[in-house]
Amino acid sequence: MSNPLALLPLALAAGGGRIGTAGASVDFEAQQLVAAGVTLLQRSAPLVRALNRRRSAILLPTSPLFVTALAASEGRGAVLLDPLAAPAEIAYQCDDAGVGVVFTVSRLVSRAPGEIPVVLLDDAPRSAQVLFDGRARTIDLGSHFGLSLEGERDVAGRDEEAVVVYTSATREILTHRDLIAGARNAREALAISPEDHVLTLLPFSQPVGLTIGGSAPLMSGARVTTMDRFQPAKVAELLEGDITIVVGAPDAFQALVGTIGRKNESVGPAFRLRLPPRPE
Image (cartoon, rainbow, N blue to C red):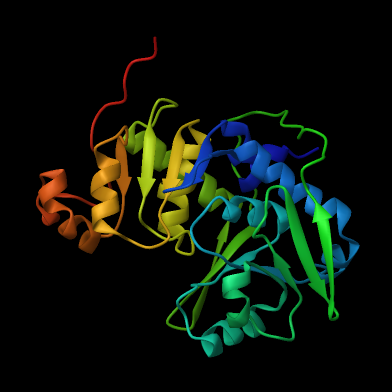
């Protein structure tokens, strides 16, 4: 029997990390978010049918909702859509990849192709709204049994597609093995520990953002704070708190050079701002 922790969403749940959005009053345990996605699959037969021999697509802001959408994709390839892309580009990618359902939120649903079923995750991990065949159904995600996370924690990921990304109309497929190995490499390179607090300024719709800014810290048991839109003043305020690692693009670091005290050319996609406090 294959190890369930060889699938990225379950590997994230097993890590014991938590994730929240800058400015929000609550963080969510990765395990809770993954359980919500699994429950969504169990309680929505139309979703299961829509994913039969089809891929999902994730059209979401960088947020905890991404974890639920990955889990609800049933281990299949999830097309990572850029929320800033033109609707025509999104429609092309969904058609080319054979997408059967789009996970999104109300403010972005107008950018999704109208002919593809939609799952709204605005209220996840408490509930989700499934829009199929012109009908809406609310699925309770809050009452569920705990996940079974038994298995070897250092197992290699499965050689099955996990995410699909488009770059200049070129389709790239990344497997669970690719993403889990990349997260472990980033965890080692940055020496991420459960005491770390990671601020990610990169979108999860890009593999580097998903891997370094999301998967690596969550698999390490760390805390992640996301920011949908880069706001230098807000970032500067957050950096005065307990943030220990920042993940972002060079232009973001350039805008923060006065705050972080580094030159742009000296940092890559992530750097350690400070060491975490030692546990009591």
